[in-house]
Image (cartoon, helix red, strand yellow):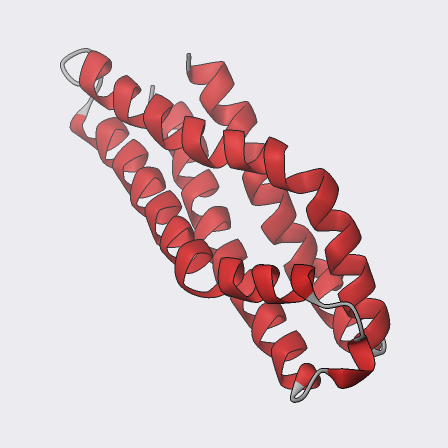
Length: 149
């Protein structure tokens, strides 16, 4: 179970790391209509796999904490708890910020008519950077727990 948790969290955190390394700045440089087209296309292919990861990974972490609480140190359980809290923070940002923007973007047909579109682009990028930070911290917590075992 631990391997599956690490792998799932790695996939989630890798997205955030990409945004922090370069993707966030690169997306700021592209024109709004290209950004919106890109977001619509990516969302079509990523939504289902990421949804499964985002729903399954917290469940697996919680299950690991419950099953292994007495077998591992309190520090290990704390690391998993931090990772779980980071995922919950990310899920909160998804529900409150990312998903409303994604729904708006996916409903758009004519990008030239987007009022305040550049602000929408910037808010989406900033949200992804915030989400990425939570995911990176959570993944580091998982890695630390592996070192403590």
